[in-house]
Length: 313
Image (cartoon, rainbow, N blue to C red; front, side, top):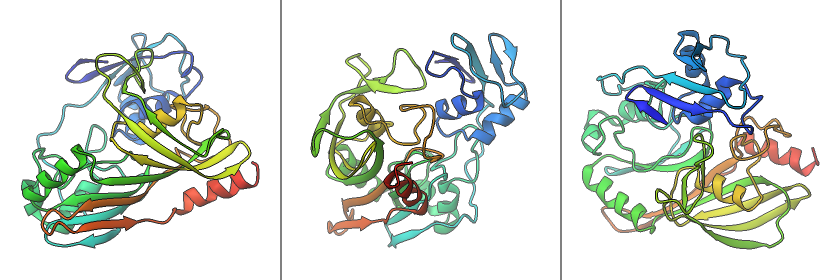
């Protein structure tokens, strides 16, 4: 809960108790890396029940109230940085990028640089600053979480941005993810049609909800492979809510492996984050109207977790 422009309030519940506070905060503060959280703690910007938390190894306690004072946003716009981008397609209007796990999409508190946006500015030049309404997110049409890998489309012109935003809004742009989940599915495929909003019991999370702030969300899933206590699934999005796949699959008893926010605290496969890859992306080209389709193979971190799951680890 944001108390004012620079302070965020977080209540620790029983589910978060025992976790390191830097991990809890990194999960709670979208776009703020764990290293940035540790810097905030060292600077005295994090308090627990009114007392500064300086040690990054401090464990969360149920019932604690955390206050995080974020630095004032810098007025300076993101600057070009020579960050390697895996570009699968590019023309005068759009780029399709295969984002690696761990790369933040756009600047935010604690991540003012080193993002995909900084790399886009370096690659495309200053012209893309006019492509979107938000000056701190030039070129960005949609985003995926830092710890999710895979495909996203970026733009070079305002016309392309408006066209693609409309496609995502009316759900004609296609997105297919591959996820490694816990537990065996009773069925081979299914459709989860359940609104998602803030979790009233835990402000770090989203949840299936019937509260007023909840927005419609639909995920279609299909089992690819069963491995005892693990299942490899394909998820097709009809909507694009924050944490949608993670929330929806957890709501039916199949949280993502490596996702401590919606699944078990103990990461049995030492996955280091949710095992989720945006492997397919489709859209109509904003200029030609041609249907474009792109695929990205499963990356090494995903394959490593999959080998462990198949081995029954």
